Amino acid sequence: GAGVSQTPSNKVTEKGKYVELRCDPISGHTALYWYRQSLGQGPEFLIYFQGTGAADDSGLPNDRFFAVRPEGSVSTLKIQRTERGDSAVYLCASSLSPLNTEAFFGQGTRLTVV
Amino acid sequence: GQSLEQPSEVTAVEGAIVQINCTYQTSGFYGLSWYQQHDGGAPTFLSYNALDGLEETGRFSSFLSRSDSYGYLLLQELQMKDSASYFCAVRVLNRDDKIIFGKGTRLHILP
Image (cartoon, rainbow over all chains, first blue to last red; front, side):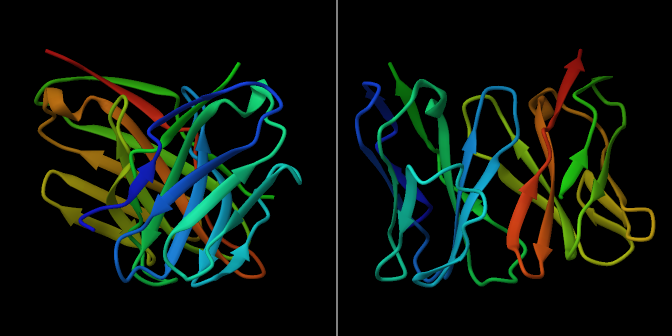
């Protein structure tokens, strides 16, 4: 695709529910990042994929958060037993290679847990 | 741990020059990037410095001093459309492998 695509753009869910957020990176980009951004804050690192494997998942806040990228392209961020504190914009970014310096961001998924 | 410090807000006048500073503390430093984010939009890449010195791209320039763990973004001939948040970001490459963002600097431009 022309850019990084994230779906849905908005998601409202009830506390305790399970959600999946999808990221479709730019075609051919092997590096993929997930971030979480709260209002007035910078993007907070969650996880980085190189190909199909998670090269660094040190930013996942707890075991309710999990992400996969089974075929090295589309990635899904999964959040179990959502809490109100999980409400934020979840951003996905991709870059051409691990050492490529420019990351391209999607428009994000705004998650609201009520 | 990793940390980046940048001013929370900066105000400047249209047509002027503004500098946004960033200091960082990190292990495995690989390079410093700058991103721009308008309200409701996605961060967009502006520049990257891996080596000491100044990189110029049009009205924007970015500087890095690795020995001082310091960099800055310089915006010249400010335009109203430059009103946005600006983030410095560090590429970390050692046992960890990630891009860490600062909290951002909100740039207000006065006519």
